[in-house]
Length: 484
Image (cartoon, rainbow, N blue to C red; front, top):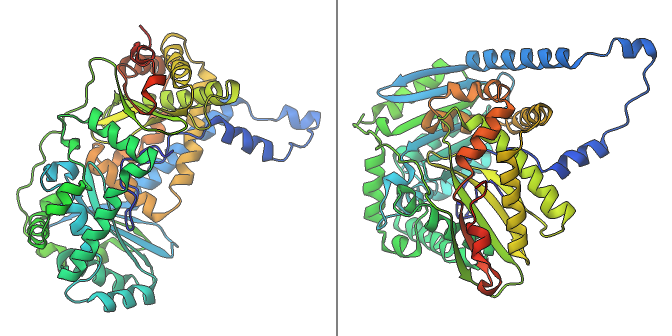
């Protein structure tokens, strides 16, 4: 199960969230098993083996150098109120651009939820200068991808292009963003496709579980307005609604442009001035996003005649702007490894137990499991939370987890798209893009005391949802507060 599985799975939808914090322990063990054995060392070689302190110093130097390089490679400027970030990656043969729109769920209501996703989807079909068939031929001929993504905090229109054809691809991208044709036949086809995807949500247990969880966790919160909408809200949308919403969103105060590739920032600035620089500024100021808070543990059971119970419980977690996000990532990763060992390896209660931490403006973390014996599986997982709260974590475990993040981070940042998404996420909801650069540095500063503190502070009052057999669920097991 993915770390964040709140989005409807549709064509053209991209994942805007971070990858899961750390690999399950089994993955780490598998890598160790596949690694070739170390050669025997001579006494002289052993005498010159670097010490742990030397290894740590080299790691610190590597992180510091990467921070400096990343800051140097990013150029930041504004064009008529539109903030632009350009990251140059010399030698890269591809270029990625993303036009990000602030607001997410706060841009819509229960009545028009889904209008932003529908607008972006239709915009990728055709534009005024590139009718549908012409756009398809141009995209195919240049190896260009035009897509979109949306989550609770923001949305994005994305361009993926080769460096060779970037100028031509940019023209298509800018015209799709600024002058979509919104042809009636395109609108109706895309709307029907979206309605089919939304109507299928309850067919898959995991998708239905996420839907149930959002109704519980986000009651009374702006996130209750599902950005992809519902069957009822999307059914009501008209082409005029989409056109009005597009006009509302095309203000530079609402937008962020991120470009990553082997491109010159000055040339990008000229392109932006000639296209997006002509937009009105507007006066958009996002309303403060309230943080989630759960006062008591709860469990809601939805009956379904399936062989196993699907279970998810979430707690309120620190947002990306909080200093607690760094020890919380370590704590969540340690919990993930522990529940995997205890629930699957030792007790064989579930194939895929999990602990996760999100990356939203109003953030959550939690646990997930599918099990026939739901009570025993959940009790074991809550006991692991209690152990994390009451028993100090060793310094070696914290350091090992930070090293996992180091490896995972660099693997996850190999593509231009991943780097563009990282810059945008921190700029929009993480206190500024520079915080993405110092992520590893702050992670390595986490101590065992920090891990125990955030476990006690946040891993409480879990909001459980269960999809399965109500008669097999002992609610007392679920609502017994871990750590008290």
